[in-house]
Image 1: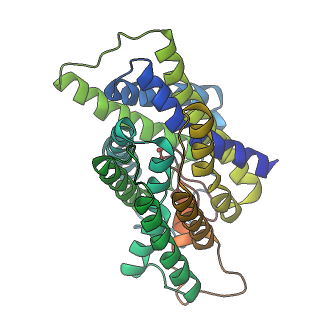
Image 2: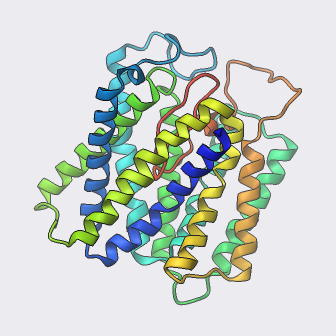
Length: 339
């Protein structure tokens, strides 16, 4: 059941870019899509917390030893960081992601965006939060080669250099989001954290809409249907099934199962949007996904020299889901979403 829930979650997250393309075709603007997505998700999560008050409580009253950030952090500061994650990090990441979606194929976007687990590992090594083992070094080299193949194989007219830059910028922003989210992931209940992130993002996008003259909501029923799919299926349902699966099978297995997301995106892009990847791109995508799986597997039978420092795989397990998805958890408690 845990595996099935996590695969369902990955499929829901993977379908988000497809829903976005269909929403654009129905006349929905990027500004309206982003605002509606986060506002609807925040409302639904708020209702869930009202109906299920038990979800407001964390599984533990104190963060685990490896949690990042000062243990004396006040609750007010924790809440402010959680809202800021949505207001700054998630809002920016989603804006970049859906801007890229306007000008490039969803399958190529998914593969470029999914380089963020590799970026998290690299940053963790550079700042001394993790060690570069031979296996991780090989995985990073494979991922780099895979990214190169994905881009070199995009010689068709669908390739858009500006869109590729936006996709990379979205992945970089999400990398920062994950590393910052690691500060509060163990200090709030997961659904509460998700609701705060959604509310923060909706607040920022709402303020931007007011300053720029508002968003155009004059589109038909089909547009609202695809928006409901993005907010309901690819955000709320995806997050809740993720948390339920995570509780049953743990973060390491979940992290590897998450590699299904870009596979689902590419498959649906071919079936629904008639997009296709070249053989070279498919080979590059396979290298990226396999390297991500290796990077997210925790070594067994070994001990870290410094147990107070979480590894990159721990960080990814706590926080990797594009906001389109939720962040993964650490050893005791899940984080929140992010494409």
